[in-house]
Image 1 (cartoon, rainbow, N blue to C red):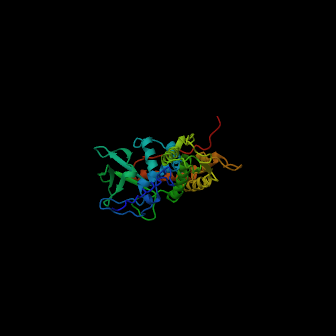
Image 2: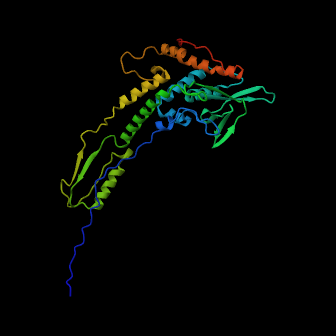
Image 3: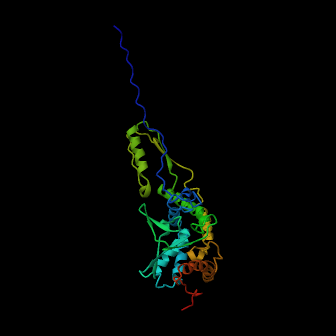
Length: 337
């Protein structure tokens, strides 16, 4: 009779292992591939595609505080000097001016009476308006195309050197800086959500610690993130040693991202693209000399930036054939009460 051989069962594998984990990453509003994928107007069989993604321009507007603030400031200046007419109300003009500054295109819809007289001029949102080959325009509504009557849409555009179908905003060169500013903000936001520091290494070498306790400790460390990360941690290890658990902090807890520089340099590029003096946007100077007189800066800004935009918008009067848009004269410096 053969002698039975006793075979020892293999020791259970230790499931505890070192791992690297993150706490998730904020998603950027926009990536450059979404906007600068093409710079010509391709015909898709129904209408011409814009030379730059209008959806991308709309998403880029709130991605940077200085970018949006500069555009809103220009719109407010234009609306403050606008003289309402029987054809165009102030709120409609504000929408037209916003489209013109954000997208470089303005689409004004003319509404006529049964006798063919002009009743009013309204806004046709530039983000959803497209040009056709026959000179007509359509609006994309829920995936469907609504075509306007011939001559109903007046199209005013910022000139583009590559094509003449659509306009192009003047700040395109600063979009990369706006996205860089956004990326720096998202990095610092993730840095604070992660506990504002690089953390530490918890070294567990206690033989009394079983894998279940180690897994529970790992889970507790993962859950201690976000607003409640500064919390106490209790770990009970009977018959444990004094040095069974060691906390070894990392050498540097500050983020090496040069956050201030990454915010200031793109800011200067954006303000240069919009040609807005920094003191008009509430930016605090870092030097002792400051920015100079804010009233002088406002006057120069109005003459060199706002008035040319006014002149461009007044071109609607020639295209429509009616005095639709008019502006007041600049009031100059504010007088003391």
